[in-house]
View 1 (cartoon, rainbow, N blue to C red):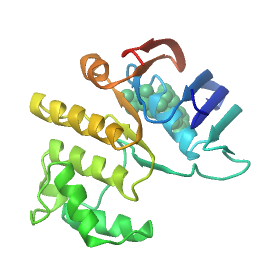
View 2: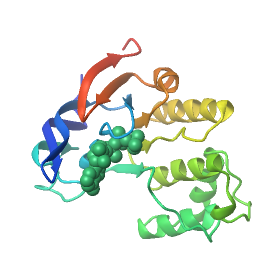
View 3: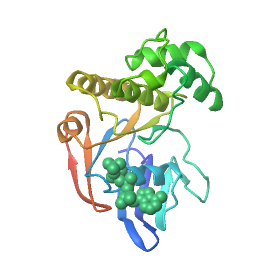
Length: 219
Ligand SMILES: Nc1ncnc2c1ncn2[C@@H]1O[C@H](COP(=O)(O)OP(=O)(O)OP(=O)(O)O)[C@@H](O)[C@H]1O
């Protein structure tokens, strides 16, 4: 196998003496889809934040694209993400939100924003403001946010929350399409069937630990 893109070694995290991540070890290789499964509060989002550099590991090491987080670089290079708690501007429409984020990211091509909206199943000409979006539309917009900048690794935090069955199927097709385009995807969900349908490998979290790893598809 090729060199790992992401490596977590003995990563632990505590807040005020409460251990919330305990000895997390995982390895992410290119062009694969990794599912992060587990109940609320089990550590999935915090693991994503530790990989991105938004949360500092109390101990252990996080390496992304050869750079040690918080040593060689503050934030992880080459990752697009949409955390579920991420707030988009409610009084702007989807296109305006993406355009602003793309501008902040130094990527302000209007055509690619329209392509992104279409890719996630939103209309570039829809004038509705995000505050008037359904939860499912908001989820699709968050997925588009993660795709700004066309990064080789993408992290989706709970992208199927609030999606109906068609929306879930759309998300499975989209994520597999991203893999076919050469991307590496990390995706969390409470939905075991969704994760099994989309992942090559699933990490099962419980109480801040990875209690099981499952390979879902033959290599
Ligand atoms: N800034 C913080 N301060 C204190 N505790 C925190 C902080 N961030 C996360 N935690 C705690 O860490 C634990 C793991 O949280 P995390 O958000 O990773 O869970 P999760 O598996 O993503 O759950 P969910 O499905 O609800 O998003 C939780 O108990 C949470 O309360």
